[in-house]
Length: 517
Image (cartoon, rainbow, N blue to C red; front, side):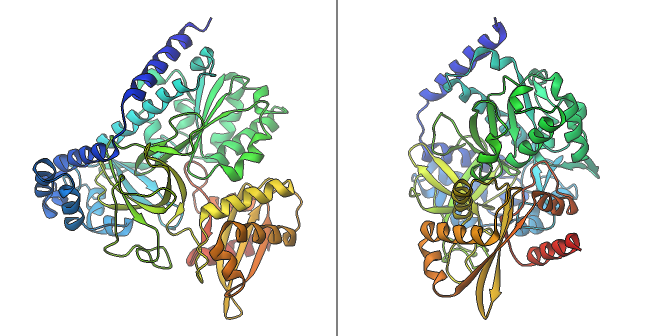
């Protein structure tokens, strides 16, 4: 009998019941969260520059919404470049008490998916604790999945992420956020954690996958966590190495997949070909800047924002009033708190955090699917949409079109990207689609165009006017992974950009020419 598993399950279910009894009051939770952030950072240089003391005072003694109006008026919005050049660069150089008390010991390196150069995102002790706390909450939410057997809670927990062997630089360490978090896992979790400390420290991604594959036969895995593309790649490698039919031939107790980073829908069909039985999928929104949201219950249409653990959220309507054609945010956008948003509308996310980000544009766009429960879905990136002539094509549209076409044609598409280009004095879209299945580019083009016109009215209008053509190039998946490897961004949290703009278009086309020659 799985005694330990039974006890863990009872504890998790009890924790889940306690959490369920807490009624969600988004406004009150967020007001309290911002007050805590302001109180902690009021004596930093940033806090003194923007008079956090006065904002905090209005929170404590003013009318209910005074604090937010003053916060909007006092603190400017920031994208990464502005935040880094004006403030965070001093953290990287070792100065303390800049945007958050103390000296920053860890920096998560992130390219996002729209920038070529690495970003340095501060990870404070407070943020590490907040992410661990939210991770525990997510584990507690498993208590709502009554079909999970007791024995599952004694199985291995495979987390596929960046190296825990962080790079030491002057007064700090830097690396992938997944590597930073894995290097700080609590002692009680270590017996369940795979691939273990030695393999997790490996920096060579190909070697890491090889070592995991060799060890896979000795593990009894119940949970896997990671970016869908890399988990799928690992499973394919294990199945091929041991000459198996499915991953369940080696891990019969695998039952839960916690995924994040990108939409899972384009991967789902190909992913499920590797399984011997269905998995429970749990969506997670963990960014380099913080643990933002996660799926809290079976069948939830979205992920619930973490409103009371070190992150204050603001929402900018994603429209032409607040963003230019390249996805750049205007200096004074209209912003709303969580209780002011509308379901079904698209918003860009601003966050203020216990890592010293203040009114910071994280770069993602979201929609609320259940405002009362503060549940959202990610719809794309502010710079990952196409609107050359008013077509307003979002990553959400692209993912759905790929999913529909894949189902209709019976193919598996792991990767794709789209570039907006000039064409006969007007415009065109060029799709690059990664699949190992036989499919004619012209057939794929016609189907994609058809689905997008059904999904997006603006796209349908512009296809009759300024958007004159659609091109499709079919490529093997290794081409996409090869380009990422050439940029030093293979594995971990790195994702291939869904939309190519500016310099990335030229860089991608040059890479294709080199590989073809």
